Length: 476
Figure 1 (spheres, helix red, strand yellow):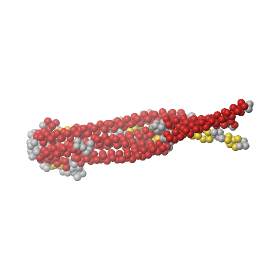
Figure 2 (figure 1 turned 135 degrees about the horizontal axis):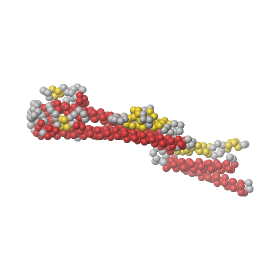
Figure 3 (figure 1 turned 90 degrees about the vertical axis):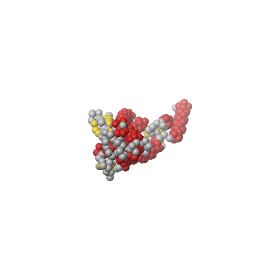
Figure 4 (figure 1 turned 180 degrees about the vertical axis):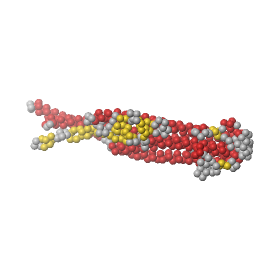
């Protein structure tokens, strides 16, 4: 269209473009604190010109080619990957921090100090076998030790249950988010099929996929309508209308996972990242320490009972740390404690204290404490001592090995989590610089588009005056 009406149309298009750009800028400002929001912009370009005979091509104003998100898909993908890795190690670190608190070392009330006090009490009895208070001290310190072991065992079992529950909770959260993504896919499709760009829906899509990545290492791909497809361990989780639910395997003590199809199919899967993986790895460490504490409690009690000559500790092979206790008869009558070499099980005398001293010597005797039910020492009753085992360690040495190995694993998780946090922070800053809303820039844009609106309004006003002159004053 040429002439004044064509120029009028140019002004109208300019005002419309400026108004749309202002609306988009306002939308950006309103969502500057919205998590996952990507700033939007109006793509403007010169409209198709027309050929004017004798002059050439004349411009026809501006046209809008769409409102788009300002995003870097590569950065988005990196954030999802690093979020998954960070979540794994941070979750593992948090769980192992709780395990460290249970062991509470070094501490005056910890298990290491408890073993030392028990051995010191036996040593005191060995040097003062005639004192009833010495036997009372042995009984009391031993009861305190067994109470500490049982408390630790119960706390570890509680942490084990909490960690399993955390996995189950993450699984429920994962399935809920997959359901939300399925709904979003339909909404995105309904917009895209009309030739429009669902910017805010795409932000929600990316936010949900990142949240899913923090739970498990999902593989994310997109269809031609910008809907999302998800896979776990090479198996489809969300593909069109098909959804497979993530579940914890029935009876799985280690938080093993499976996918359950709508058709009743079940397939075991393994994941490599995300909070679930972190919980699984923490659970493995917790289970190891649970087993080791049971082995240590059983072996320690067996060693003391062997030298004592009769049952000083009552302990069973199964869940030794939870059921270890001082013999009820000895707790009721400490005179039943054998202190001397000569044994009279019906009427133990104070003796020379050598048996009590021999028990205290276990503090420095190297034995294989972590063989549990297979704990066997070459015991010489005449010498009241075990033959030291070259591959063994002392009681406190065995316990310290438990604590040290756990500390190393936790420190590794801490270090990786800290490193991943830095990488993730860098990527978030990078995303913010690309997609985040900068208030100063938006204010500049508002002023720019306001000026454009006013200028185009002035064009329309001028053309209106010219048309009035043309029509009303010339009689055209």
